[in-house]
Image 1 (cartoon, rainbow over the protein chains, first blue to last red):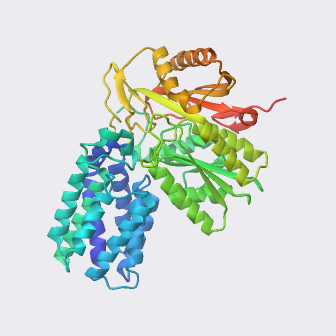
Image 2: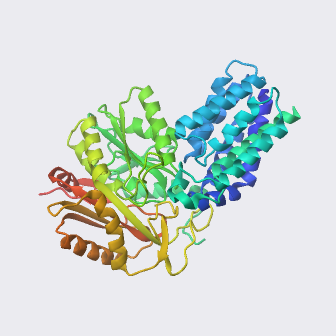
Image 3: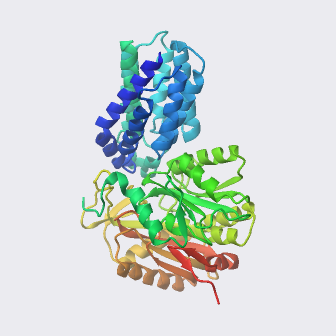
Length: 202
Length: 335
């Protein structure tokens, strides 16, 4: 993975978030407070803007710049969670060429960051329920398989529909949180779907 | 959507400009931030108190900034926690050398963003303590969930901790006072109509004309139960029946009462609710030390109200009576 690909990855994720802003917000309105799409679209637009035309020497630097912007522009719970994830990913590849092994370490570090910051585990109807299977799926093979990652991420976000939330604002609904996709799981799916696309093209 | 706005993207900053223009004697805004502080911040050798949260709850929280209450308030986007950099700016601006207490409402986003800000401040050598308000009895309290939400009871935490800090107390003593309030304050709310987010223009939840949502949160997030709308006295009793057992109120106890409008509830209706609150408490032999009726913690134009009870002792009564020049909670100095 090169600098240009990380930039492309974040910029394509932004395109999805802009396009799906209302969809994400409608998911959040059902079981949260109805701002996930708005916050993510606002934050990632700023990320794309802040990375545009900048020269970065390594992948870690791009991720760090993105993390800082996400933390200061997204707000809500998604800001600290995605910001922490990107920051941990950046730290995991500092000074390194990003090969497949390093990429796995980055996703692992990102997931650990999310779990720590959000005090969440798997099965709680959160973004952790997408990141965890994606990481396992990546570990099962020895090279980047974009189709596989996209498929695992998609299935994982669909699986959140039947879960009962025990973390985040949806947890207040208890039983009533079932039957809805978790908005954070869906935005995480966009992130991995675009990672898969960008890496496949490389 | 019908709103008196110019552009949904500018509502926070335009509101804050107007707020400062209206209350210049008490507050100021930190340039290029959404932070409102006391006019004289930082106050040397006084514990600084910072609160904040998403916007849309006006007068919370900027309305509670002033002498005797908060030193700083941070406004996020509508119903969205402010970001760590903004909270950090507020902490730095109010630190007078005696440390800073953060009063956080218990929401996943708020707790995380304030926590990150506290980490940044501690890295700069500022002593920071945190309390998390969780007064909403509608939500089950369990270590396996996010826990209870912070709602209107937060205002009592602001007032008591603010007065304590003003008296020159140490950071750990101010924190103790805040925790005492948190242990003894409980709230429950009901909504008759949803609110509309400026950015999306959509109603926050659906409710039929003859329905109410019991246990409503303050972000338009649905409550715990939809029920047919009933008479004000019945609703009041229902809410009190959820709140009172939590406080283990006895005959000789004293409470402060807050009947809080959610944004679009006529005062007439709030007073009708309060009438029953007082009658009900009197019948139980509980004495009311203070009563606050009005809009303290709103949810844009949501229709509905919440009832808050705070069990008080002599010290807390004194702290509620202490002077404050916060625009939304003025208490005059006794002569």
